[in-house]
Length: 120
View 1: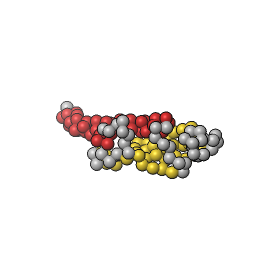
View 2: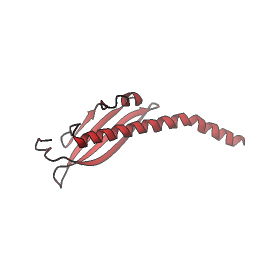
View 3: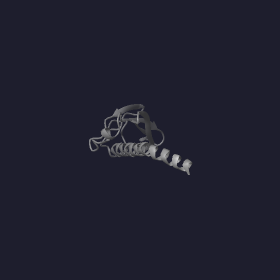
View 4: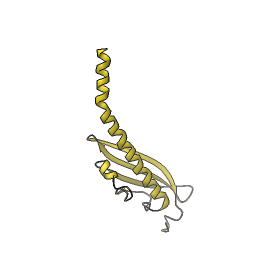
């Protein structure tokens, strides 16, 4: 009985940290999703193929930088041949949870005709 009580107290002590990590992961996933949707729709310009760049938190989501200390969103784009106009896109959100550096990332493909030729 005493052992079960000790284990239960240990779990209770960790609950706040677990909830904090899960909440931060949810915010990071939302930021990545919104960034990808912005890239797909053209609201966020797709970086040139072969480049990577940092993006500020999206203006529609001003709370994201408050929810995640040290939040940084990076986008990397490479040309995928064939077919033409298909791009490999990586979006990485780096942030801190309880002083620990953490990252979430998504890799996808975006089709954008004419980007290399200069017409987004």
